[in-house]
Image (tube, rainbow, N blue to C red; front, side, top):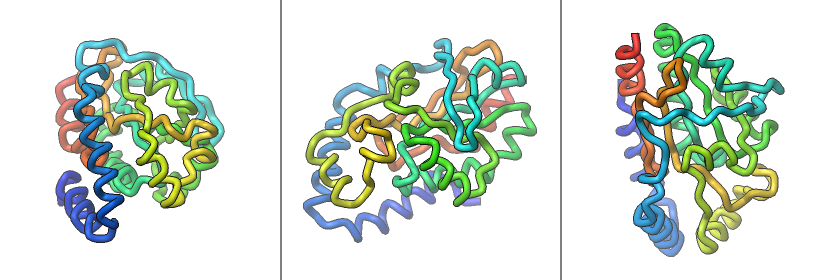
Length: 216
């Protein structure tokens, strides 16, 4: 099976050919500024207690981290939204490995700043077997040290591309989470963390599964 990183790299290289040079420059500059900001270093990491949350799901339920932890370890992944093709590729890959995670007693949940109605279209589109939660205003992402503000020029590019973050993020168009995935033990301790300012890279499902194997 192709690794997720290889799949993302292939998509990235093809995508670069389609994006006008001036937009590429804005994206690259914003990515570099975010990397230089030290944001990833401020995010929660291994050994920290995972901040608790109660968030609405795409199917109208409220999902609490404490309830999930009562059943076993939790794989918690933060993504930018259904408008982000890298997020969609990553979520599909997690879906492909979902059975392996549940076989190890874990629950997988994905969190984005999108309103539940937008998350539902994503759930339907990919037939995801795990909960997709709405973190309006990225309040939970802030607790994990993941939320950041889009610079003006990149926000303008996203508007031009028709992403309509004002609507899908319920009035919080400039705040997004860094791509991140955590493996949280039943006692609420973060046992493994992937955080990157580069939205084109994501946690490798094989690494998540390997971590779950160490929790037994």
